[in-house]
Length: 467
Image: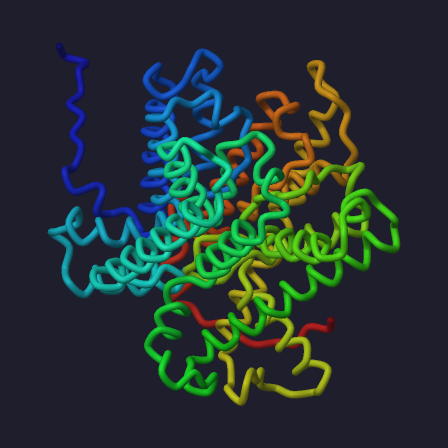
């Protein structure tokens, strides 16, 4: 044929992918494979079509917890196992697994390039390759097993069937450590609101999972001294910021709901009020479990605003949660303090922080805010169309932050949205789990590779800007 043209694909084209691009592709492949599995009859009943499977798989891999199906009813036991596996993949980190696999897949790449990629990926909060990944997996396995054993013998004691109790213990332990918020029951953990064992086991798993492997490993190494000064600055900052945020959520919710006289905490006794506020404060930092119904009617506007603030900050770098991360807000607060003091350097705990860290913190925060606002704008444009229920802007903004920060709190909006609105949430969950900088970096490098190389070689004159 004279007009035929031979098209050749270079066998090493995948090696040209940058780390952010490689991670995005890997995440999409995992979600696609999970979607096809969940849509099969062996995993779900007729209520779960391809769209429901896509939304559930994305929510699982991104460890969000938002769902438009009933996990305990619509998924079979095998489907629930597949869901738990996706939670583990998403919780241990798409980026960590990508780095680990990359050492085998990109076998022809020079060692220096592979190490540079690992270092670059580690800057996004992963933790490296090889032994580090093994440490992440072993730590997760130990904590999940301990949590499941405790829940089985002391938590879910009301479940008489031993097999059902064992699976409920394992599933919720996996979901809690990975900050996923998926539950086998449609009302989440509301039946266990008065069960201190269930509440505190999940609280501990959520916190340790949100800390990240770096922090838990540092604590374990220095377990004998038990002195904060022996811990790294990162560990001390994560622990301190997390404690402040948990306390802020605990006392803030008690205060806002007491002043508003809302039904969220007013109908329970003092001890249950403290426990529920603590559980909600911890869960708001990207876990998504609820032991008391959360809705626009049961929680005051100020309480919802406080929860949105906690959701947006989220967990810590390298942890199983989302959000802009605790160290990001700590760096921004330190920069603000230095500005007010008229200092040129940013100091945290007698250590000078580089300008690169602060610039990255600013980029993460501004990029995340803009992305969430765009999500809310798209939802508001589709609000009330195609027979959808009209939602307030507060409900839509809350849902967008919940999706982007991979929390999973829902005010009853998600299942009522049309496919366009749910697609917005799907994209938000995926981008939020990868990280806004990694996602934008993947797009920027794909579109402006040559321009990026030129920018790295060009220097520009300096000039002041009035702000």
